[in-house]
Length: 291
Image (cartoon, rainbow, N blue to C red; front, side):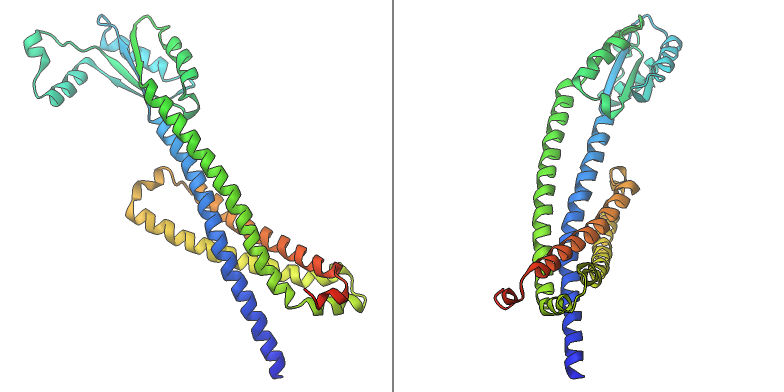
């Protein structure tokens, strides 16, 4: 009776150790997924906040400029358009300079303008060339300006960040699989003689694997839930510190990260157990004493 209880405690401790070690690895994997998705959203956010300024001619009235702006806003590449009248431009410059330019110039020197924000997929040099050409098709448009160097720098840096994230994700996936596999091997190793006994009495390989796979699914699920709980706590702390983080950390990011962690937990644990049990099933009885 004591021996059975001791074996039960040993297996329970092994299962607990496996759950904890797996959940730690899943937390790292979850962080990689979370950072990757957040970086993608951040790149979209940065690109969509880059502006293209459209300057109208001096002889264009506010009414005509407003009509053109409404037409521009229907373009497929525009997400937001802000129209700035002559008076509004004068007011903003007066506040910035601390003096009214029209007082010593005798007239309002500013022209109507519009600031366009583009969809992220159009925020690149090639797209901006034909967008500028399209906007200049309006005769009332005198000039179009945008921060070309800044846009190219943003795209270049974001590509580097995404490449680094992909490399880290691949490496961490390989390392995590190795760590979980080693932990599972130790757990299965302790029961290698039970596996061999079941094989000798004629049990099929599928029958022998089944309880181990069920346990692996349960342990993977528990480890995934623990990892998701830790990540949720970290995310809540981050939100408490910086509420504006929701601009890039959307509910889709949270949902995909949580689902990915659970999927990784179930998949990696099941595959590792399957491989380890199959290894001992194929092993001759004599070799069991030498491994």
